[in-house]
Image (cartoon, rainbow, N blue to C red; front, side, top):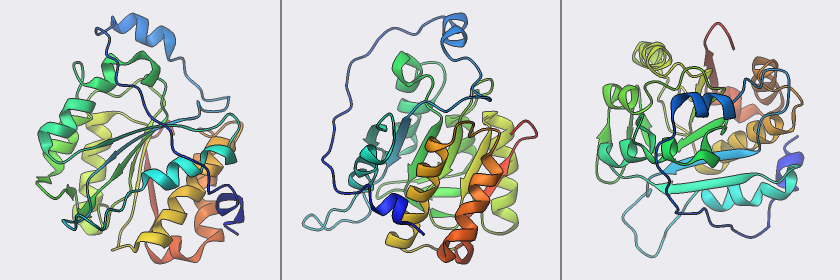
Length: 239
């Protein structure tokens, strides 16, 4: 049932550009990022990842898996990947209006921001820092008005009452369409396949925002680990 994803794996890696441009007026950004509720989402994904351990000769990353998904999609998926190890590092990329994501016009219509770090209810952890719910809300505050979701590829971020409370606060602060994540601890390969399966179905759908709950439910229906790990979608009323 995950053959539609696994069959596309195995291609090479690409590089994201490092150029910077001045912050554009809000009106220009709004003009370039029109609502996409009735059409396919742009084939772009931004991944912010932490190093997973301190073992210098045992480096692992989600990047290779994301890059390998490219040929499975039409048009091929564009992946922007950066390592983030602190609250300040996260804000450097995400915080409005000076964060790099807000200064790069080619990023503005990205529909999925994928955070790949260690996690616990309402927080994420890198090798250097713990980024709590307040910092996460501040880092993504003001993303309302744009069709995007934040995907926590992390253990337990949405677990229990603390996870549910964080999700509500985060959605209110960010104004994004939805939050996706897990309610339990997760293993590397099964969770990676869950993520890839969701991405493949989301980007392949002709109207993914209208079908967001359907896409999420299909992953849980078709792949047992998604049910075991509490794979969860929490959306705003407009999603």
